[in-house]
Length: 65
Image (cartoon, rainbow, N blue to C red; front, side, top):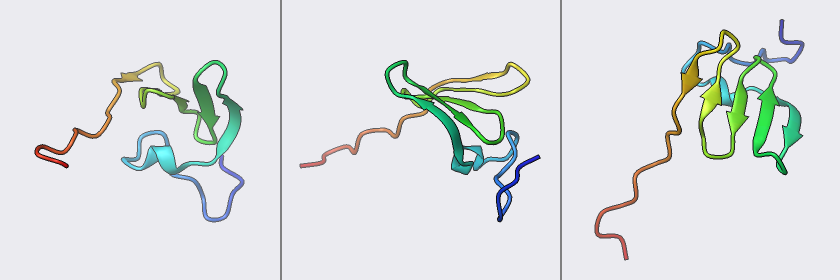
């Protein structure tokens, strides 16, 4: 269980990326969050149960200057 106050969001929560970072390996492109989620630099995720979440980068603005 998360020892932080307030408690980090669970791996199933929509805001799971807001959990605190436990280990960061930028040279390898990933971080381990407190809730067990592995977050990749391309915004992909690997959940504790093995479910992969595809990268979800924001769409570029259409017609942006």
